[in-house]
Length: 499
Image (cartoon, rainbow, N blue to C red; front, top):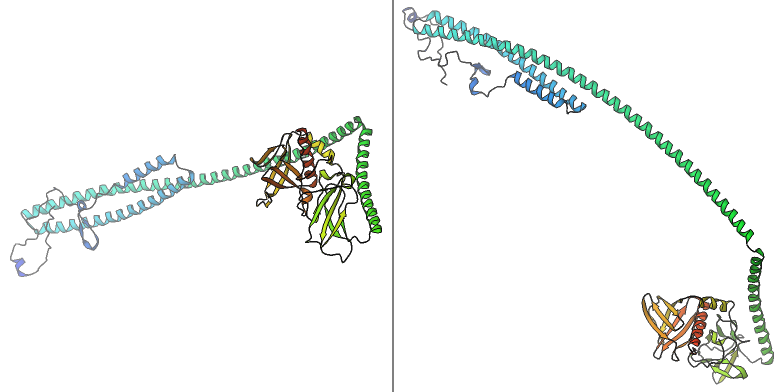
């Protein structure tokens, strides 16, 4: 767009003006192609701003209508708190719009003043020009008047928009207040619901505690009733049982225990009496056997008097004294200690020590007796389908066995088996090459150990948990071997009706 050039009016009182010199007050090349006065704005520092060069301004009414529509659409799906926040934002936006309307109103007033000034200048020019320039001045005055009319219309619209903005602001303010009230009411309702829920939870917890206490008291009462019923049932059962037979069984068990104690005391007295007699007959004896004459004990050669010579490194040999005073050598029993086995029951035991050039002989005070209750224990074991004992392998083929883990020693009616878990270490049927006897190597655990030769070239030394298990295992194996017409004894033993 070509901006029309305007000339400044210079009032000169010189002689040239009075002589009728033509003054070009308005330029002849002024052209109004649009047919109306251009819509210029005077900006800061009196700068002329063309509205067409600026960005298109959206009318305030459309902005307000658009935001109102968006608020109405979102109102249904917003929560109370969000709705209040939106209303507050809308209220602030309305305030901004109101301020902008005020600024526009002030600008409009400034425009009216400028138009009035422009009209006055044009009227002044019209009175001083003639011809074509006068016509241009008339046209400019008409354009200024049209512009004034447009400004008046715009002012009306601005007034209407200002009223609408005020209505919207009041509406938004009222809506904000309503939203706050609704939020407070909802908060109060929520707090009331929370309090009701807490009260209900407390009631439920109290009811559950009462129910638990009632159920626990009922359970205690039921348990007490069951105990009473059990006591009554026991009393009735005792009334129907033959109490005399039970009393006799208890008395018999007590008598057996008493007899066992008396037997041990009697054997000890016999041993002391025999020792006294030997001392009276032969006062030169320096050593004696320490131990009980029953299975499960262990004999040890000890000095009888102080000052006796040391025999810890002297060789020794144990014998069985059979009928007629003959002796039977116990193969492998060459230590100062010896633990009797079932094969020694009913016989005297004798130990011979080679002390320098002399031989010292010591003998038990009486024959070896069975341990109390051993035979009944063996009979109870024979009624079982499987007879097994927990053992530890201490030696294999005369050498110390490295592993000290627990094995199972199984004694069957046809064979003997040694296994560890599911792995079988040895299994052999009863035969003449099998040997089984008490351990004859001495040591503190000799009373709980056995020597088992499965076949030639393979032997074990097994340690049992107790001496009763060790003696019972030997007796059971010999009974089962006898049923197979096999005499099961130790190395070098002769059969003569013992054990």
